[in-house]
Image (cartoon, rainbow, N blue to C red; front, top):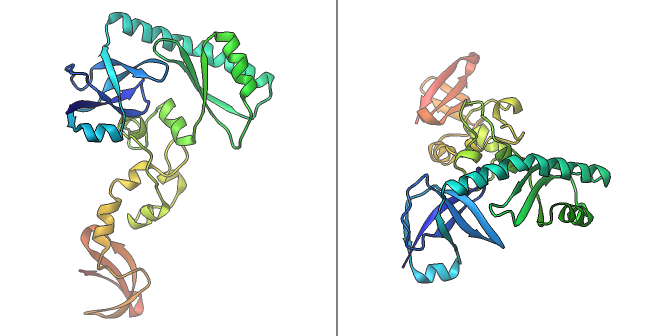
Length: 260
């Protein structure tokens, strides 16, 4: 049996499971964890869970080293302040080599053994020489990660039209597919400015109630279908899944609501 917890790496990074190693942690604690070729910091975002040995064999996990101490927090702040220098140097090298890429963020790993640069681009590019340039400049292992527009919004942060911090920053672990069908089923205006997030893609929250709407839609006639009402035959012109009702237009253009 093993105890594991979920840890969000860095400020808005990936959420992963880690072994507690028998140590006790509370939700919200900052910790130092094992990562590829170095150490990283993160925040505990879940209560402890117990898993069987067999499950761990199928999903190897790394462990938490310790809670952060005052020195760790000073190191984290120093790394954040140095990120501006990283970005400036990388942008300069990108311009010199005229690479078609947009740099989004640059950051040190906690122990400064690795530097990660995040970028977006429309196609495939060869950045091997850029990596060599940066490695010679900073004398550290360099990793360039291509990300999408949703990942860019997650890294940069911000607030949605609801006035709250972006879901991808606050709690989302993965980006689930979001379709225009979800907006249609929820009777939302199909205006891109109304249903798109800061990333320019459909808002993630469209999927939160999607399953509920699908269940409520069962048994309701589809738009355009003709049905009988106590006022006569008519065509379905609107659906209201929450009320389990449809609006039917009968002869003469009159509209009546029919509940199911």
